Image 1 (tube, rainbow, N blue to C red):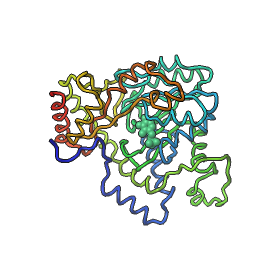
Image 2: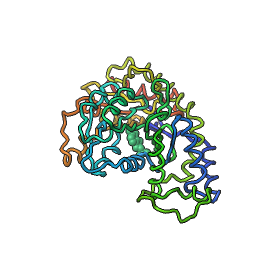
Image 3: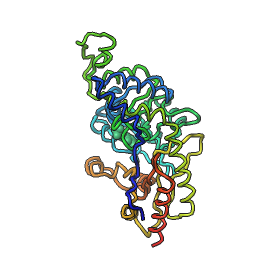
Image 4: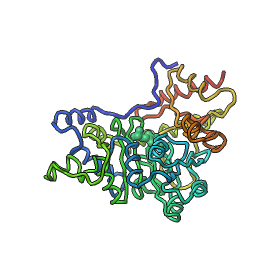
Length: 381
Ligand SMILES: *Cc1c(COP(=O)(O)O)cnc(C)c1O
């Protein structure tokens, strides 16, 4: 057994990244400033998108977006239940109703036909998730959104570097990214809206900072009057320079970071092929490039529950994650929204069986062998 605990995720931070943050602290300008501008430009460039706005989290991006799109009372937002709770929660807080859609059992991606079946005259927004770093099938989803005149916004929390049919997620349409510490690059906490809708992007930029015409740094560098005016009431979700500075080096290394994740994921697939009790996720059938944010397996034996399996791994110093417990069966959604079990069969089947195995760039093959032997030991009993 390992002596040292192996976390399921660990950020890829180097001394240079830490120094970059310290430099900001010494510079005298620590909130939104030149580093944020540089990070937004570098990220926009990397994804190939037209416009990028950073915020304090992806959840903040969602809040701004729902507000900017005027979504509220009487509206519906189509989202998978198999996602992090941010989008459903903020939809409820906006006054609108989340409409949950089932996912493919093997890829955990929303099925475009299921999405279309849930469209009503009240539907205002569709938010698919690029699950685990793979890609949803964007072409049919975009066609459906266009046909019904509904906005499509991609939850790309897992998809930094993911490609769909050769093009990076974010290169067209509207996508929301997260820089939470478990994501492929981190700002500690942070998020980014990348969009080809310039009007939406500029509105989001104003809304993330009190609804002023420009943010504090723009006022400084553009020599604007410090008495900038409120165009419409906004939020306070601006990313500070300390955080942007942390990510600049990681973004330069992103291809290496993702390549290390990919190599480990391929090795997991190979080693797990002989273990019948664990089933990794499957690949979609179209051309795509995985960013391997998560390596998810499903426990498909009646001999041990997923929860006991996670505990047994922890007892052997192996950390795991759970991405995700489905949203519609969580307390609020059952008790207040009246969501019921049995309504989203593939989501619920996976919700009971999934766990995420350790996967991060600094993880060694030796660490990975420890995970595999712990798994074999648990399942052999
Ligand atoms: C991490 C995550 C989010 C939220 O991101 P934050 O930056 O933590 O707000 C949203 N959706 C999914 C699918 C995520 O994994």
